[in-house]
Amino acid sequence: MMGKKSTSWGGVAKWYDDYLGQEGTYQKEVILPNLLRVLDVKKGERVLDLACGQGFFTREIAALGVQAVGTDISPELIAKAKIHAPKATFHVASAASLPFAKDREFDAVTCVLALQNMEDISTVFKEVGRVLKKDGRFLFVINHPAFRVLKRSHWGWDEEKKIQYRRIDGYLSAAKIPVDMHPGSKSKTQTISYHRSLQDFFKALTNTGFAVTRLEEWISHKESQKGPRQKAEDTARKEIPLFLMIEVRSQK
Image (cartoon, rainbow, N blue to C red):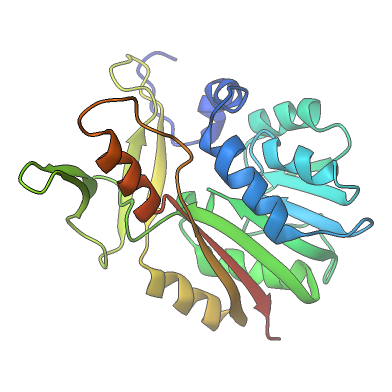
């Protein structure tokens, strides 16, 4: 309905599906190859893709010969996921409650660029701990919370030093930030993003019985066009990571 606001990703399902079908996206060029490398699954293992969206990563995980299961709270996105990844199994469910999953069922759980849209990550972590096998791994990827802070960070240019820098106007304070997915459109479709510091994530993980076993920071694959700022921009891309990957294991 025109003018109606929604905070569900279901409202942008078609846009998101079209976006992930493009070439050169961060999801395809940066996150996917790194995720599969770190995941390093073995055939026959069971992997849960939490908040899987339209199944972009679930499909690639299933192609490795594992039993891939995807879940998302949006029926619209799950409908698209079933088309994109017919070898996987999908469920509509909140990340905080996975009634379809048995205790200690999965060898690994992944969650890509979705925790930042969840309000209660402690409950999510607790549920992930329930469905993971003993010594199972939980890998999640988020926008780097130290350098990509919605409405409180941006690129700047130092004319004197001829360098591009990252300006951070806020980091430690948690924030709930509405994001307009179609700026300027009459249809105000919004999603919600939650900024958390690294210590917020580590405290929530520790309190729910997880220990961090691996951490990586991933940079952009893009390069600037020729020009006076090309070298500085490309250097900044290599120095300031876009994404943070954390792997944890349950200690319970």
